[in-house]
Length: 208
Image (cartoon, rainbow, N blue to C red; front, side):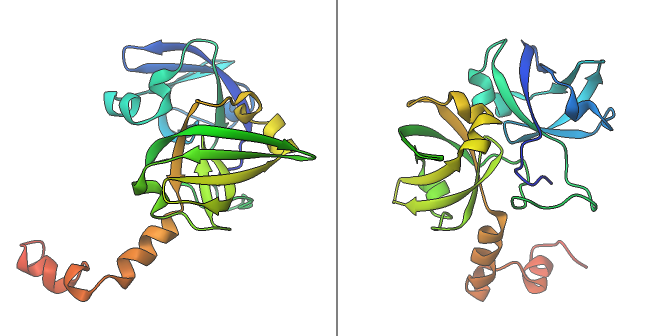
């Protein structure tokens, strides 16, 4: 579990053969083998650590479903270590499970902020609400506007300068994760016939 508050921007040192190596510094502190690190919002397991880098295993599905498969050596990536009980939740609860990718379709620079509009599939916008949260490349952002196939977020200059959004361009593909709370709410309000119940589990052989 993460907060969507980026701790560091790293660089891809190598990628291929089911392995991703990232040059970093801050996120290495307190990180051990088997721990998780969010890379562009993707929760990945650390398989190797050096004094200035870490490696994670990446599956083919991860390459296909996220923007990591479009990355090259030298590309910058957002990095965040997992949430701990002593860490403030400055953003929102982010699982690191990417729902889909979206495409940046407009950028508007204003005094102190940048407005980014992202084209996204219905599977994402279905859960998006104005003033709600969404994680974009692992960054916790507030939705300012929502359409049927897109949404808009406003990013303050500090966030822009301390994440890879500082280099975002129209046409870029970004990782998207909706607020998990919206999925839980949807599940809770479904008709009883569609909800997961003890009766359903018993009828389908999951309980004795």
